[in-house]
Structure formats: C-alpha cells, structure tokens
Length: 640
Image 1 (cartoon, rainbow, N blue to C red):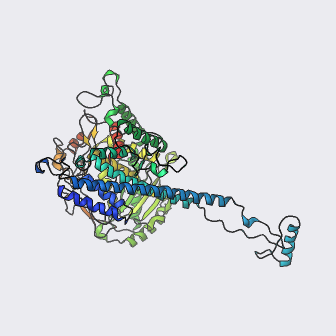
Image 2 (image 1 turned 90 degrees about the vertical axis):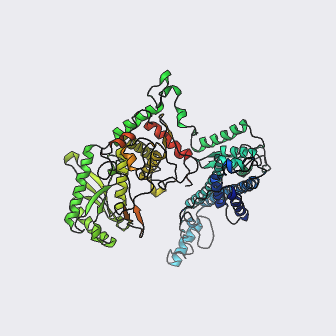
Image 3 (image 1 turned 90 degrees about the horizontal axis):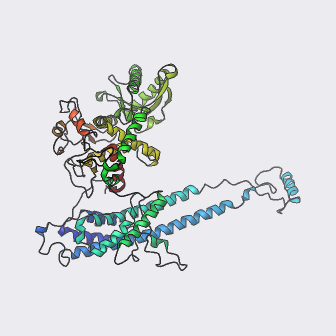
C-alpha cells in the first residue's frame, strides 16, 4: 500500500528473520502473481536484517551456521533461488513477447506492400484485361445512368486506409521492455541488498555470495539492465549451434562456474562494458571522484590546488573555471533585468487594481525561476494573484474575474493574450508585456495564475538557498543546461522539470558530508530514522545546511557538529491550508537566512561564510558537479 498509506519500515532481528523469510518464500512458491512484490519484500528483508550484537549471541558467535543461522540461511537461499526462477520466467516471457511483436509488425508491413484492391478497374461483364474491357466499362456506366458504387463497370470505391500499426507495435514493445527492466531492477535490488549488508554474510555461504557477486558485476544501474551472461556460450542451444537468447539473460545461473576466480570477474565486467558501449556509447566509471585527481594535484592539509606539485593538474579546477565563466556569460542576472521584471510586475498589478474585478488588497507576486535565483535573464515571468484570505473569493468567481481581466490586458496594450488554461487546476492567463522604447523595445512573456500560495512559498525557500552561496547558482545552471541538452527536462514527456533538478541538487548538497580535503562523502547504505523526520543519515558537516531542519542556534554560530531541530514548529505562522487538497495542511517552515525572524544579528553573514566554497579544504563546484552525477548514477536508491 505504498500508494495509499505511509511506509512502515520493519527491521528484522534474529528472532524475526526466519519467519519473515519463510513467509516470503511461501509467497514465491504460491505463484499467484508475477513475483515482483516477493522480490521487493526479499530485498527489503536482506537490506534491513540486523543480527544481535556479539555479546547477546550464544557461544560460537553468529558465524556458527550449524546453530543459530542455519534455518534463516536455508530460507534466504530458497528465496534467492525462487527469485532466480522469477527472473528466468520473465526473461523467457520477454523474448517470446518480443518475437511475437516483431512477427506481427512484419506481417503488417507485408500486408501494406500488397496492391490496393480499391484502385483496380473492373469491366462491365465481369471480364478482366484492357482494351475491350475498358470500353465495356464505359458502356456499363451509360447503361446504369450513373457512376455510383453499384455501377457494374465503375471503379470500386477506395476503402479508408487502416490506422497505422507502427504506433501500436511501438507501444507494445515499450511495455514489454518496461516490464523486463522492472524485473531486472527488482532482481538487482535483491543482489545489492545481500552483498552490501555485511550482516547477510551469516545467511549465505562464501561460494553462494561469490556467485551472487558475479551476477551483480553484470548489472548496470544506468542502463537498468544486466549484460549477457558470458558463461552461457557453449551451453544448451537450439540445435543449430546458437545459444537460446533467454539463457544470455539473468536468472539461469546453471552455467556459472562453481569456483569463481578473477578471470571470471573480468569476463563479467567485459560483458557489462560491451553492453554499455552499445547502449550508452561509453563505459561509465564507478570509481570514486577522488581517483580522478592525481596525488600531486592535491594540496597538503586538505583541499585541491590549481596546480599541484610534481606537475599534477587538477581537472576539477579547470572544470570550475569553465562553469563559473559560462554562468557569468549566459546565466547571471543583471540589475537591469531585475528592474525590468519589477517594472512589468508593477504594470500588471496596476491593471489588476484598476480593473475592479478583484478584492481590495490583491497583489501580484513573482515566483519561479525569475525570483528564486536559479533562473536565466531570458526566463519567463511567472506571476500569481495574491488575494486576501478574508475576501472569500471562490474559484469560479476568480476564473470569471480573470476572463474579464484578460480583455483589459489587451486594451492595456499587452499582446498574445491566451485564456486556454483558465480551466486548468490552477487557472492561468498567458500574455506578453511590451517593455522599453525604440530599438530596445522587447516583449516579456508572462504567466499569471490565480491564488498559487505554495509556489510563492517554494520560491522563497529556493531563494534562501541561492542567497547562501553563489556557487550553488553556478551548479544549478550547469545541471539545468545538461538536462536541457539531453532533452530530459519536460514533465509532459515524463521527465523532471528544471525545478525538480534544482531540488535534486539541494538534496545532494544537504545530505553529503564535507570531508575537509576538497571532496565529499555521499550517503550510502540503508536509511536511518534521522532526527527531523528524514530517512537519510545526518551529516556532521554538510556542504549546505538543510534550511527546513537546521537548528537556528547552530545557524547563528555554524561551528562544531551540525545540528537539527527535533520537529518543525506547528504554529499558524508557518502552516497553510492546501489550496486544492481539502483538509490538508502544509507546514512551510524554514530557517530565514537573515532578516526578521532569522535568529541572527548579522543578517546571515556567518552562515553564508560557512556555505562559501572558496575557503580552504572546501570542495570546488567542479568536484561537487562530478560527485552529484556519480551519486545519482551509482549511489542513490531509486526504490525509495
């Protein structure tokens, strides 16, 4: 019930693990479903399994398999074998369905190459051919007195063309590929949990773990697929010397070696690299970011130098320089742009006030990238009408008022007024506002929405983050540029928006640990119930503090270990009713970096100094960019 209720995390201990594993094993063997949910349960059980401390174990310790963990070990191995059967079945179903789709597509292609019977000419007496047949056709028309579809010598009417089958087959093929990827991700999650949780070593023998490790070497989380099994060649074929395609996919491990060696590991890695070259065009490196910097390019005592001793060069310094230069040239917002946006906002607010269609005290607020510090000079202007809560304006009345307002925008000289989205969940009017005179005159694209308070609050939160570090704005601009270049920044095509990528960046910077030597350590392993309600471990020295949970006293003097508050304040000053979800209250509290209510007398200067990346030992923007991509490619658990 992850879709309808809260997630309850259960950590199985010594007394619980065997019953839980046998319950999962029973679900596997029941064969009532595809087995995906059972694999998910197995992965969570292995990931969270926590044996008793050594002082609470019987004599002999937890590695005495003949006693305490013999039963759980058999149950765990049985579940893993069943998971492999699920994978083998999924692989065979995938190959079978893929061939069926290809055969149907080929049949439709051949059918399309047949002559169109509707274009054939038939003679009057049923004969075929040309010459006399053609004359018979004309005579038949004259006898009938018309050229309708029933004319014996007429041309048969052309049937409407059938719908193009390409889209249908493409959809079926996509669904087949998606189901297969989901199965592989689930199975990889089982292997990952068993291999990364050291406690699972009491459940699996060494040879079992070695075989699982070989399987996991074939997995690529970026492609979301296992590479072909390099040990399947020479096994069962189809009688023609070929290998059954299903045997090249994960699940069937009958051809894996009983005793694994380094050569076997190399074979698996080579197979994975070949798949990555074919799919991605390159081979991603799972190495840590620190391995990319020569030892001679690291500054003694922490940090990375621009030119290290011994001729070493730190490529991250060059990357940082390029990032800052690109941001300054293309993304830095000048004071003139800020003034232009304020001029446009005031002009719109003037039309709203003069219209008389809205209650007194209605304001126009800017939100989104134009106001949060992460936008470019060419960003559209997102605005919303802030109507006093005491006015009691209903949504229907607001839509009618915005419809009348659209007409007044046109009379005020605004162009391209579009009201097509007034029926959306949040009504919006789109238009352009002329600004400037003469050759400097330009049109500012604007979107005006009705009562969008959460967007304004989100903008305030992001603006607080962007004000803490100029390099955060540099990082965000590069990540957004990368997403746009890869064409993965369009929510209508099921990818993240630019706002989503900024949130990913902030999440990374507030959870990774600044190690003090110019690099960061990203969180890994199973989440823990951290103070503040988060699931990720609390770093003792984050790159950026989490403004929604940071302790105000630490923010006022950011020295010593990082501290968070146990719970957010729940007063009326930091809660708001959700505008579209009845009965849902949003707590929008976050620490204000300077100004009233910030708890600091220095306007947040000390906190901004802490967040600066120019201090010795701090990671550079180039290092953080590489660490960001590595974290979300190799370290982040997308199942949560």
